[in-house]
Image (cartoon, rainbow, N blue to C red; front, side, top):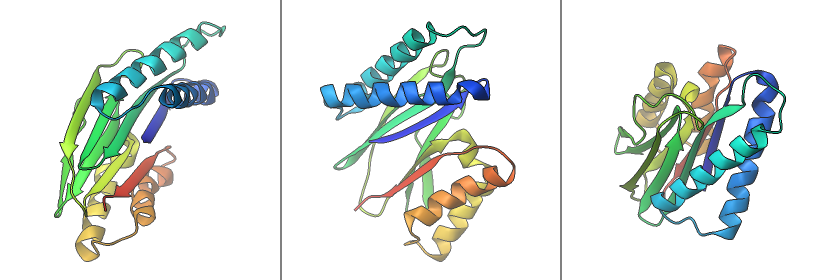
Length: 180
């Protein structure tokens, strides 16, 4: 499973939000199989409930929040559930197909939830990450690199996605997987 958590709100609460969500996802996935988009949507709901319940323990004016994206590569499909401004793309034959909506704003606590599935093929790249990882500059670098060398290692591609944000002093997260 691919999991991308992008904390939102005061930096002092980022670790709280991320740890709470990752623990909820991990715990739920150990208890119930997650093999399709509907199962991922249930995990998203569990994570939402966990963050809400744990936030009730805080003495804060602002609640911790995050964007959350869950994806599973299941044989010949990629399944995704997301809330907030995370991104999921499938890159095939020189073209990137965005699976998450362009207008996905908000967060886990107040944003719309999206589930989607898409057929995948050997050679496809599945790219997931925070919205800050998919800047125009980062995406252009990925496309240019893949045109030059379609077998570029996924670790290099992930670094290309996060580098522009880091140079601008912004956090970014990206996961890239090549379908075999």
